[in-house]
Length: 220
Image (cartoon, rainbow, N blue to C red; front, side, top):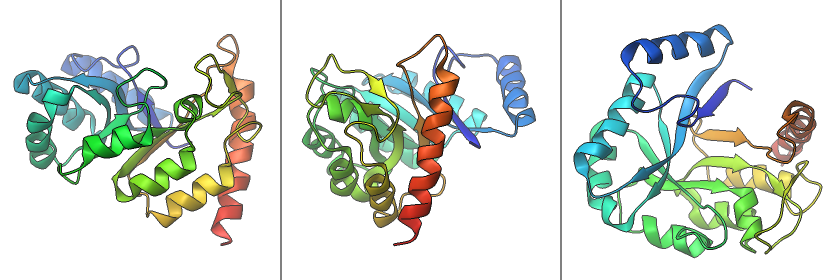
């Protein structure tokens, strides 16, 4: 694990220069870089949107995972072009405006090439969708991934399990990412929310699954 995605409680986009410098030093000393931040909300307020991009630029972040309101896209089209930083729309499960694969596809259609998707595999499973199909369908617009497996497909009350133990075909996922030429500076975040008191053991098991899946997917 060489990269990390932070959110506002890890590093607030409104952080001052001292806090940002201290955080960048902390992660650098751990041999890690921040390559994504979110999930951030965006509206039609161009100045407020710009402040998030200024933060991302200062932090060296290429990918902003996002929940943009429909009226924000004119602003975002301009900002991704100006800053060369990607917006990655995060599907957030049943009832959310970006619930289904089609919701994300329709949102990014006809917008700047750097407005794309953060595929949350667990939330797509909860929404009754196939996350591998999401990667294939969204193709070159997939810039980020929140990787987790969920026990019950199509059930908003579902919960995380070890990768590959339920509904996520991990090998097929990495083959799909390879097929769509997932960018080398994109963001893949391992998420596990099933055991907040001790997430490390579960995450270690997930990493073993990921390493084996990448090796298998690389074979063909």
